[in-house]
Length: 135
Image (cartoon, rainbow, N blue to C red; front, side, top):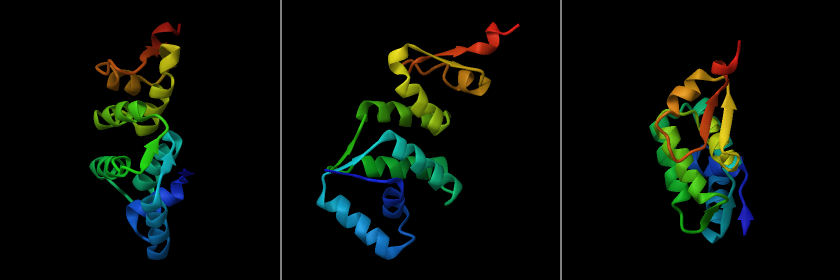
């Protein structure tokens, strides 16, 4: 099994460098390949910031990628939760942080927007609003 770096995933998804896209495609097609949530988090950032992808384009690209039979994600259940949270308005990186914090039971933050955006997400760790505890 081969783990993919962000630059390989991005080349595969955007095809902006044909020879690198071909090599990335060949590695993935030969499979099996492995991708971490951290690589997907960085991929989302690159697609959004460097390539101007919209949220819908990012969701489509990532869902297409992780739907490949020969690709394994280090936390498949977690990725589904991340994509659900991202689709509902949570920042992708915040969604990854929340999912990975699950075993802790609570996630402490001062980020009021994150508190609001996660109020209805029941399958992810409880978000503790530290603003309510400051004096």
